Image 1 (tube, helix red, strand yellow):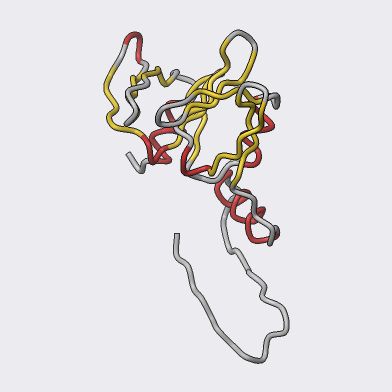
Image 2: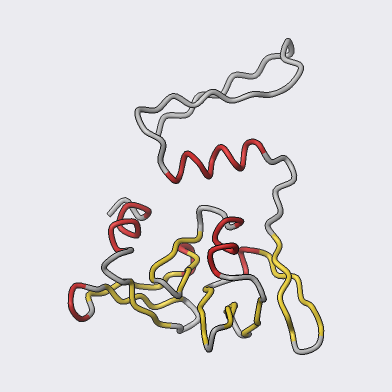
Length: 146
């Protein structure tokens, strides 16, 4: 995508114009980011009886386990009460859903390899492994320009 930046002292409030032939998920997310000046890249998670605040950059994966969303970091697992679709709405473009039950941080992927029945397999830098389902594989490939 081509990006132009114009800096001018004559503008009272910054604004952005987006020219496109179709509205994509990435453009929708970009519009949301541009419209929201208070971008919050911190997530509150349950840590035993306490609440921990995680930066998005610390998070490797979100996965539904036993009907609860588990958040995985380098060395820890946390539980969050929000459903996966609500979490997905606030995440940055570094995160992508790879199956009905899993969202991964693309920056934390160590390797991608073929798996069974047309699916792909990923391994994260912290050793976690999961499958990319066929339904989400086209979006995954597009996100990686693959």
